[in-house]
Length: 409
Ligand code: PLP
Image (cartoon, rainbow, N blue to C red; front, side, top):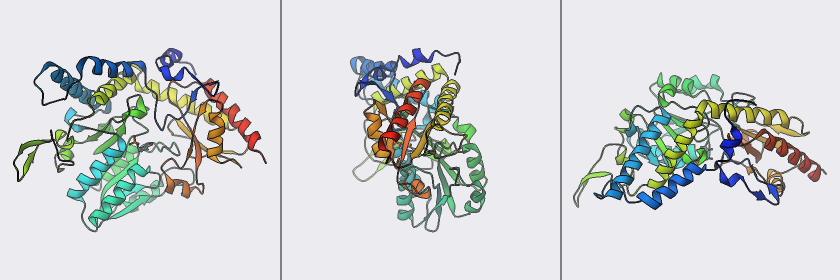
């Protein structure tokens, strides 16, 4: 695993990683749930609160100008990061969940009619499933889904038959948080577009891990969460193609999203302001821009290659553990590995690992239908980011093997 970047130096920028847990060096393999934050992101937050903090847009004083400039500069940074054509195509949200709910409420209110259908996949996170269930129920529409094959890929042979005239929107996960499957997003969008179907990509596990270019993907919407890519919690974004955002009515009402208000009625600003009622998470946006700058300084292709090398190493080393079964395809996949270990419940395994300073995650990973499809109530998941090391993976394998022997009947 050799390349031009000194990954040990990169890792040193993440202060939280340098600590002991249960008397052991911390090994943080819960990155798919949330990532750790590099010092430049933490410093950007501190600098914002120590120097620039004020409310945005409506102030005429220096600090408000600085905060507004930083907030709008962060929007431009996110637009560049996603390859969007215009900063106005970026709506700041709390993260992926809020982005999906925004579209499932606002877009669906305007475009979803009784008898229409929304297409999802059987591997979607609850965040990209439940809001659509609610949307179709409100509209009198129906939900359909693309099945998943035994190897953990989307059943693409079934797709064409599912792209019927009733389908108005196709929402799918870019990288599955449970299986690791990397879906062929550009191809899925192309096939949906050929039928005039609007597309929504859940990029929670792809943004910040692989290069993303929304125009190359050809999607109408793309959602991601900052906290999974080095930024603070509580900030993320929704990309919406300008022509689509402009057709959508407002979401929440309040300050900042209006032009003129009388006691009877209001007129509304153009996107993205139309969808950002109230005081936004200014510090979060500043932190998100700092995280994007950090990732872009490394280069997304280098981050993706590092993630991939770690994942390959894990897949190879995990083969040595008797009774361990990895879910999902061999490739292409994101930087996480979900597995079951014969005779050991994931919660017991994760608790055992914690006593050795190893942070894993066990459960249904907010994908209950998917795990039901594979006949397991839960899995154990190890998820990596570029600051992890092959040595940490070797140590994980030792700990898992120790657990296997500990729990053996
Ligand atoms: N979609 C996927 C694939 C995820 O992995 C997650 C979080 O784990 C989400 C959506 C929801 O993200 P958030 O909780 O940041 O809104």
